[in-house]
Image (cartoon, one colour):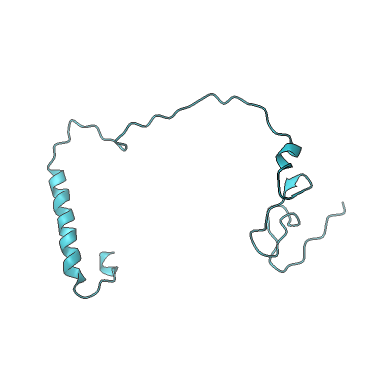
Length: 108
């Protein structure tokens, strides 16, 4: 992959020197005796603070929708992700194509 770097003429020597310095540093780290040190993925111990999941009071649907800029049929109305779509007229699980006519309501 290093061969694919787009280096300008003269940059090779600069980056070769930096890479050599990094490799020398890694070689020095390899010399350190770490047998007595347990392997860690985290330098500082991380403790998960867990609490019991206690159900509390919930908002009613009307309360949740009361501050919505727009609501329709008990749902939040949000701007469509793709232009020209109305998410409430799309069949379940699919979005209408831009410019397509909205699907007709099922009479049954």
